[in-house]
Image (tube, rainbow, N blue to C red; front, side, top):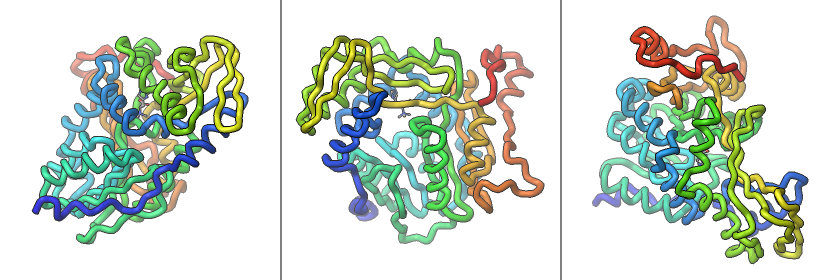
Length: 362
Ligand code: AVJ
């Protein structure tokens, strides 16, 4: 009975081995070598990422969860009833459970993830927990979606959920292109609930991506192991090490795999030479100020409705609506409108020294 509302996965387009091969060759052929971060998230990588979320140094997951819990009533009211909820990069759907418990009369939930096994296991689990919820999973690269599956119940609106600050993986121009696509997929009256990590001092950011247990290192090196396994490359995993510095100029964490010696790696018919200290960039994680992100959203066809912060102002969750005309300022509306109620409250009560108040806007 429970499974009846879990639809079989819609035909998505998860990247194939050929995609991995051609994108790896293209990335490693650049002067600054790269491997696209989406290939970090196979079954093993997704599991390691789940472990990262539990690390003491990795503040984003628990902080965002706390924000969602603290403001769930207001968030549910803003989203409203009968929405089609679409999650980009749903993983284990942990954050969504809370939302699904509070939203009224959800028309359907569409989790999208690049890791098929994790997607299907999580969707089956959710179907058990929410027997009357229509779940329509989509196995795909969320950057590559051109249409969304319909739900049986006609939704009043479509709301995208994009938690975790995963938007930070995109360079700003690509983030705009991605958000524009979300705006057009959601259509008029659409909404976006998004988690965005804030700019903050290196001393907090860097430990979050260079944890003492070495889980992030294992996660990062996993992409080389995957290239060896799936593409027949010959990366020597003991000759690369993980390093993730914060690049203040660009406002982003950069995940690097540093070659510890001069070496040559073979992939397909290609040879890639590494100097000692040369590195492959695998992932960027951009950090934003609130006004900086609101401007980026505006360029993408979204207007900020409301934003929330945790008490330490580490992370933000924002609710945006699809603007009537993409990227165009509406008369009598302030695109940067947000009420930093938390900041004011904390200043009034004096419970928080607001250590990041001096930061510059992006
Ligand atoms: C999944 C992109 C949100 O950037 O914080 C965590 C990925 N990489 N530690 C992030 C990640 C290394 C994570 N996102």
